[in-house]
Length: 326
Ligand code: F6P
Image (tube, rainbow, N blue to C red; front, side, top):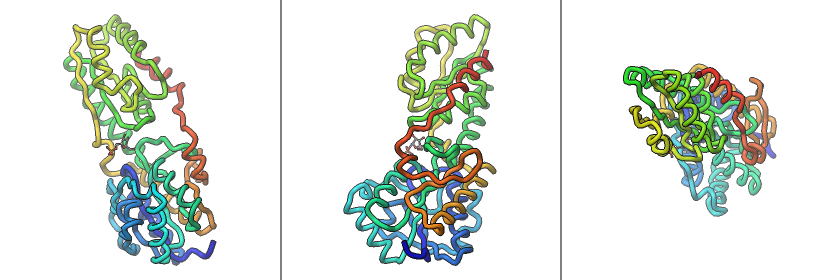
């Protein structure tokens, strides 16, 4: 691999609060090291459509605190084809780009891994997804902000649930992972938490609710992960409704509110560290790896591993949640 002089940076897949902090860190670390930086807009689609724009230090001013991504994002079908990747490679060569930092989740890293098997322009990944479901890193950009958004929203729902003695089913995001559900469930003192990692929870849920009502619990918050195998919040509510006819049931799907907003301090700091580390990795001659955080230390994890393996939730936390919501 030759010397790195010019790099690209893009965001891909679902946006996550803190992506802008990472773009800023990549840009300024690169400029500090006398590299030129090109922002690639709309994720991999921008690679194919030559949607490149040079970024200077001032181009990333005043974005650290903003949600979304100044580079825009997309999920791109064409990059999944050999022809699409060939066009992307030709465009990168044409612009003299020697390395690319991609910020995103599983799908983003899968595209980067395949590209790096075919072409010699190094790609480095930064984990950016509210789902926190990437193997090899304890943390993904945006997760902390999304979690805090959920906690704030559920606190508000708790007030009205308690005022009306209601049973609330609240659906949270997380794709097929239960991190947001599990952690918000604990932070909000939910009476039950349903996550995709644990099958057949509805039976237990009915038992938990019955016992709670016997103990004169007047309102309940049930957090349902959107990827829950027995259905989303509406389906789960439907399944238990006939057993609790005396109770007033409501369902709330929090939806995309979880993806927006100003990043928390933790997301800003970690995104800055990961952005810096990604440029360092390129300068060190790394390729096809993700920069991640394990035990609060920066680590490099091959895309191959980050994609293939499944990151599990800490199942002990569910037991703790059960005990604490007595
Ligand atoms: O991966 C992030 C995420 O917000 C998931 O939690 C959710 O399942 C999905 O993206 C929603 O995607 P879209 O914005 O395309 O509806």
